[in-house]
Amino acid sequence: MKLAARIALILGLGVMILLIAHEGAVGIVKLLSKAGWMLLLLLPLHVLPLLLDATGWRAIIMARCRLLPLFLIAVVRQAVNGLLPVANIGGELVGIRLLARTGVDGTWAAASVIVEVLLTLVGQYLFVALGVVFLLQITQAMRLTNELLLGLAASAPVIALLIVLLRHGAIFERLQHIAARFGPNLRESGLSVRGADVDAAIGTLFRAPARLARTIAWQFAGLLAECLETWAALRFLGVSVGFSEALILESLTQAARQFLFIVPAGLGVQEVGLVAVGHVLGIGSDVALALSLAKRMTRIVFGVPALLAWQWTETQEGLKRFRRRQ
Image (cartoon, rainbow, N blue to C red; front, top):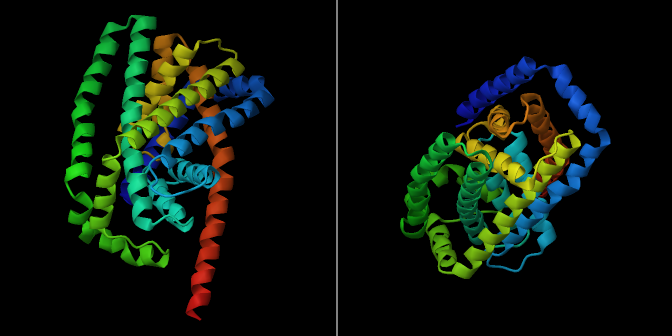
């Protein structure tokens, strides 16, 4: 997996560089320079979807926990997935570890993250469906819309299968021998869980439909909030669009990133998606690439301090374990 993620990183970075070179790096830089300090206003807009996601996550954590620590963990999760070559899954493992350190039982921490990831897929599925509806309404692009609808229809059974497996398949107990490979690391971190216990905790969460519904609702609100960031960034770059166009751009680009999840940070995938969807909406490729870079700069500003703070906490935890052994 690590090798595949690194290869995907190199390929994605190459695609991104080729796109920028083809459209003209100077022109893209001029667009960003024209927006100037206004791009800093994207930072508070980026807080909102993360806060809404953290609120949704809290709804399925079967323990008392404060929103601020969950928000900070959510920032770290996004930073790990978005800035490190971990194929978009490392952040979830880190999230389980950090949540357990706040006092939440390790089994429930793991179950909450696993179920939250699944519910995120459901929320994004609905989000993409809404984007396709808006795309048809605005552009009347029947051929493209039909292709996207076929993609949605093909992915629905996959999501349904994942739900069934998590709900009834005792999947983590069956994969206990694989999880055992990570056993020493988990024990060192203070998080040691049994697959059967995680399966049981997931089953309990599935028997709480009100909690699941609240999580999906908060996550969907977070996805809509991300559209505000896209809408504002385009305005700052001098392109006037409506919220519907921003939603189309955001939803279809996220769909492409989820489909090619192994590419770290969606490098190249995000750029190709924005250029392709932007073309349908009448947005120039240079603007689409400038938008992508603006969104990436926001995530870097958020992500780098989060990664540094996470590494500091890991170092402190390692020192504590070392002292206990002395």
